[in-house]
Image (cartoon, rainbow, N blue to C red; front, side, top):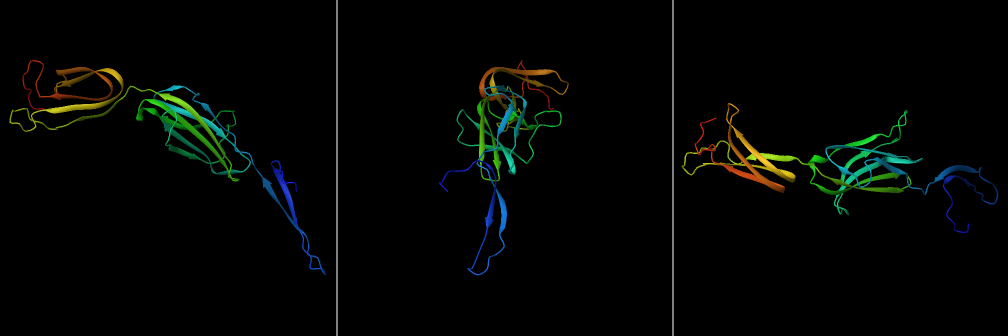
Length: 219
């Protein structure tokens, strides 16, 4: 009555009515007061961890009045992300198993992402509209060769100015020394390119010749 918010719990309400002559039977019911956000936790990976490859994300979220879904897992790029990518939604219960093991929420393939800082966000929801948010900063580093391709396939190194060469290209996620080796149908090396890449696109032009400058046979 004094305007103080009451603690969480189950409250009983009663409704009565009278018209001055007769009195209706009183009815009652219960309502749950829930002003507490569902506790959410991530046990792996650890805050600030350096990640590579496929990383299991393990976590928990529980509440007496779980929403559907009860948890949502996101990641954002950068130390302070401005956009979030939803990885997966989770439905109750998200709790330890009978042997006390924390469940794996998701196996995150970090090789598909650019290297750098990221934040994993784990949010818990309940049916009272409470939301808990846990942000976990991590760093991703993988040395991966992505998107290998050639520009002309087939090509014809016959000096007619029509597809006389082809560009071999890829994207390397980390700073590295690279080697591109061209082999003939007998698995013999005919051409080798080497270089240094600072995390980016690599491309080398092959004119169909071996190291001696001789045009190679069809194949």
